[in-house]
Length: 304
Image (cartoon, rainbow, N blue to C red; front, top):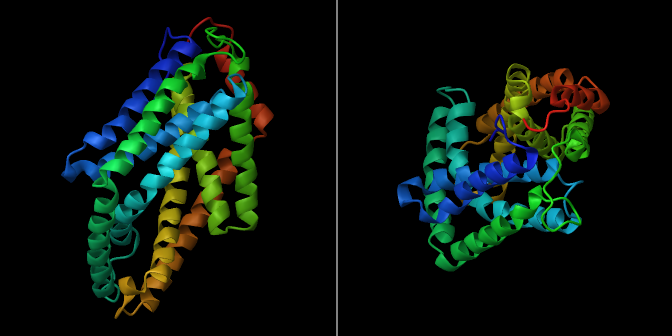
């Protein structure tokens, strides 16, 4: 999801938004063996769309921003159960040490989680009415998204190709990511970690889109944020897994869970420590300095 050389801001938004909506609308046509991947891809595309929406939120219609952001958020939530259950088994196998003491319990848990995924995914993906409703919401959002490149109060005036068109949105996302880092460093609760991860991911996708301004520097920023959000994502998946253990007694029935819980706790502590250290480095500068740097890259060109 990158703006291209020669495009204006409005042209770039129209293209990348169209590409991401095409990914989301493909979820209903995915064959059964690819449905889990299609849901995962759709959720990633929804996050990219919400990042672009935040980039221009101060320049486009207020109602357009809030309506479409809420719709995309709700669609992602409807698909989250399928994604979370699919990921749980992979998370157990990838993030916990391959310890002979843990392995018998982990093997049973993986089998049970895979069974739950088949049941829960079928409940959604084979519910034709619900899937049609999801796609209809996405199609309607796609139509409205044509206004994401139109200046507020105008019928067909494209967003000016000026840094001012994105400056408030970019600064807000960076500032919130920086604030989230400081809050989490003092109080790393599951909720605060999840919020910080979302904010860092929005910034990651915005920098991804703006790569054309300075491919070397912006790619470095993007990769640093990818590492940060991957750490936070793994921690979030383990938090979801712990909640599943607590809320699904049949899942853990007959399993000695103390070693598993201890291993999950240790892994989460390691992930959080690495994420906070990385966040302190990335978000060291105030938002004004970060925005001034990007503004300098933007310059006064009439296109990218």
